[in-house]
Length: 31
Image (cartoon, helix red, strand yellow):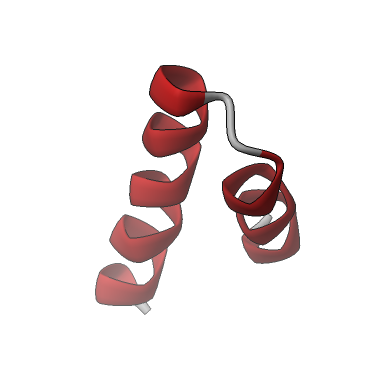
């Protein structure tokens, strides 16, 4: 679970940097 949460954190940070809708949707799915 920890690795999975870190994987989701990557999408959250990636979304903040690139503002990509795909990353945002993946991050929201993880949450």
